Image (cartoon, rainbow, N blue to C red; front, side):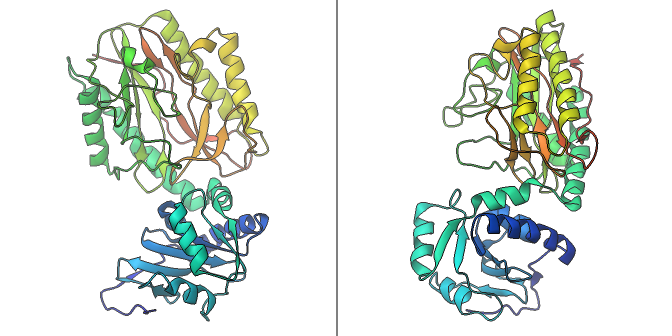
Length: 404
């Protein structure tokens, strides 16, 4: 066990004490509900949540302590008065159980939904003599309610996201394919400061910086639970742009992430070349109407499933059920929480048990696929407020924008 001392070192903890306490209070409540007195965090997103940076190692927090303890493998220049360097894996037990700077665990929570079987087994075998619990849900619930700082960071991402989308009509050129347009959008996004990573919670979804999809490719089913499909460029990543030429009378749906601060916004807008038929235009307006209705419903105490039911009812009454959240294959949700990752809580789905709270950040995406035309609809990121309707933080124009 080696303590940090280096004149060229950097402070490990980047969050202020006040901000850290807000987050720890939520983690503490989640652990108590899970029947655990402590948690050992190794997931990058959760480490970022509790420190403001990512490192290889662990964050340990016991509900009896006022601050976490940090166990760092890499990089070797991070310092804190509550940290240890991890050399051999077996040192974890000594650090947690025989350290005067932190309280030893009695029932330790691990991220069983995230860490591998091998790692969980090694940890349980190494830290002997205590009980273990699943802390995955506790961390999800903690992160689902954003502090003022987190909301500020998401709003900054939203503003930059809007600026990128405003440039899309100017980077389009006649004869472009979907992937050529996507590359130009991604270039604009990186120049605006996008971090270039699209963190997704869970192991069953993969995507690059986003999705640009046009025409018939919009109706190609994928293995992933996305509203939009697409064959992709290779069977190893079967989603999104497939090299289709952008044709007249087809939509181009752009869903490129807004990760500019470590906190993401999600926004979808539709573009088109030439005129569109009335069914497609009707689907797009219906999507806008649904998003506005759900934004008004998204208040503390609202049941997430009721928002989904409202969206499905509006689609059904307008005669668009067959195209709602896909055509050949339907997605099972109409919105999802987001922040450090996509697919955080709450989930807006028919069987969701989530109840909305002030501070929830949610991407609402009631989308439609019209065969022969393409995808229609929008996606906005909203933040649930203490009172009144939720606040939209992705405010690019919602109507279809036509390429000249």
